[in-house]
Image 1 (cartoon, rainbow, N blue to C red):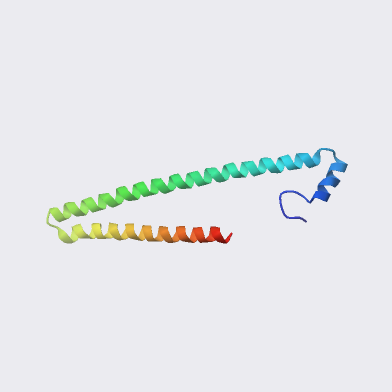
Image 2 (tube, rainbow, N blue to C red):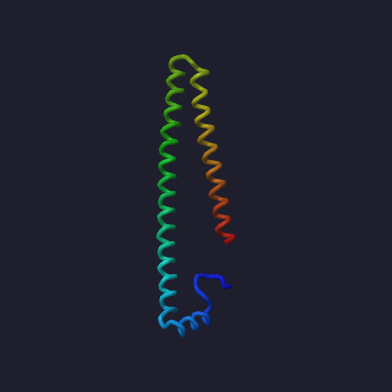
Length: 114
């Protein structure tokens, strides 16, 4: 057994003796697989970024709607019913930002360790 995408050099040399050109074909296959993996990883990262922005946009819309509804309730004289959605939305937004920042810091720390 060996670790890695290619067998050790001696084993490649033995393959080449048995079937000429096999070592080159194995190297080319490994390079194609590596390129394919990098393309897929780039797509995953791009999709994660898009999902993040879409989620932030909808969270903003929902929060602003709740704050607007709360403001409208306060204006119409229903203070307790108006304050609740405003406070809840603000607490939710602050919580999301704190949790997001902690996850980002944890991710950065894990990257440094690797």
